[in-house]
Picture 1 (tube, rainbow, N blue to C red):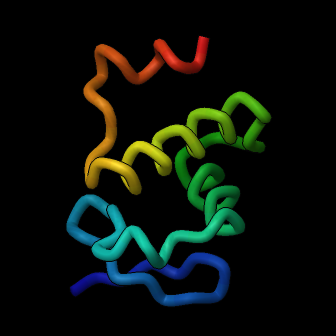
Picture 2 (cartoon, helix red, strand yellow; picture 1 turned 45 degrees about the vertical axis):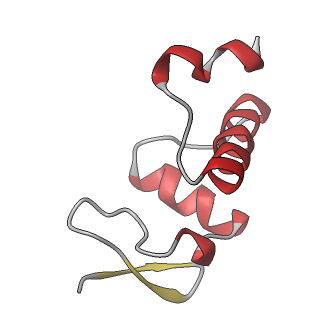
Amino acid sequence: MPTAMYDDAAVPVDEEGFFIDPGRWIEPMAEQIARESGIEALTDQHWTVIRFMREQYAAKGTGPPCACSARPLV
């Protein structure tokens, strides 16, 4: 199983780079993941979306459908 290094921790990931265990994710990892995705710095708007998606996943076991993802944020 592949791993990625985030915040000095080896994290098991799938073939697409998604965490096998989302519980291993911590906020300090977000900045590094963002940089690797071409985002220089995370803004307050980024954090609003990140936290919303994490809350939805924690509550439902999945993220919201695309059609409703932005509605609570505007």
